[in-house]
Length: 349
Ligand code: F2R
Ligand code: MG
Ligand code: MG
Image 1 (cartoon, protein in one colour):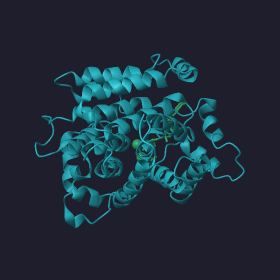
Image 2 (cartoon, protein in one colour; image 1 turned 45 degrees about the vertical axis):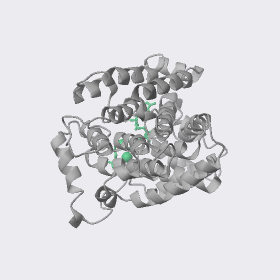
Image 3 (cartoon, protein in one colour; image 1 turned 90 degrees about the vertical axis):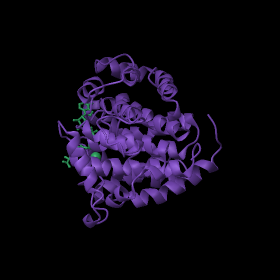
C-alpha cells in the first residue's frame, strides 16, 4: 500500500504482537541457533496446534492499553493511560513484567495520586528506569498521530508514566519515530531512513536532562545517536555476524541495548540473507533474525515487527503465524480504528 495505508497500520500492530508472542520462547536465552528459531517458526504452520496458543506478554498487554486509551480519548490522556496500565497489571500480573516496573504499576492503581508521573520518578533511587518497557509499547503513538512533533511528544510522555530516565523514554521516542517513518514508506531508501533518525535523535538528545543522564551513566554524549551511527556502519558491511551485532548494539533489557538493535534487524533483513530461508519474505526474515540474537527476544522482535509491519503491510504476515498468537486478531481490528483516527487528524510535519 501507499504511505499510511490501512495495510501498513494492520501490519505494524499485528507484527508487533507476533514478535512478542513468538519471541517469548527465547527471552533471556544467551545463544539461540538459527536452526532452533526456524524449527519454532515452522511449528506455527502446524494447524493441529490450535489457535492463539502463544500468549502475549507485558509488551502487548501495555501496548493494548496505549491503543485503547488513545482511541477512547481521540488523543493522549495521561490519567486514563496510567489507570489502564495499573488495571491491566492488576488483572493479569503474570505477563512477565520487569521487576522494577511492577512497583510503579501498583502505585498507579491508587485513586489518590495527584501526579501520575511521580511513581516512575521514584524508581531506582530517583534515577528512573532505563528499561525498554516504554519503547516496547511506543508503536501506537506513531499510528495515532500523523505529525512527527506529536509522535515525539506523546511517545515521550506515554513512556514517562513508567520510565523517567531519559535513556528509557528517548528509546520510546526513537522506536515511535522509526514506525512513523516506516509508515510513510521511508524504508524504500534505507540510507535516508537512518540519516533521518539520526537527525531527529540529535535534537531529541540535546536537552539538559538527556546530557546529564548520559554523563551519569557513562554513556556517549548522545547515546542513541552513537548507536544509530553504529547501525549505519553495520548496514554498510556486506557480512556481519550475530556476535558482532550483539557486541556493537546489544540485545538486553535496556532501551539503549534493544531499540537500535531492533532497527538494525529491520534494515539488515530488507534483503535476502544467507542464514535465512529463501522462501521467507522480508517480514519473516526480520522476525527470525530478531529471535536469533537471543537476549530480550520478545521485545526486540516486537519492536522490529512494528517497524517492519509498517513497511511490508499485513499481506506479508503468514496467516498461520497470526492464528497462533493471542491478541493478533484483536490488534488487526484496532489497527483499523487507529487508521481512521490518524486520517481524521490534520496531516503533515
Ligand atoms: N522482564 C522481562 N523479562 C525477564 C523476566 C520475565 C519474568 N520474570 C518471567 O519469567 O515471566 N521482560 C519484560 O521486561 C522488559 C521491560 O522492562 P521494563 O518495563 O523496562 O521494566 P523495568 O523494571 O523498569 O526495567 C527493567 C530492568 O532494567 C534494569 N534497570 C532499569 N533501569 C535501571 C536503573 N536506573 N538502574 C539499574 N537498573 C535498571 C533493572 O534490572 C530492571 O528490572 C521487556 O523485556 C519485557 O518483555
Ligand atoms: Mg515481554
Ligand atoms: Mg522482553
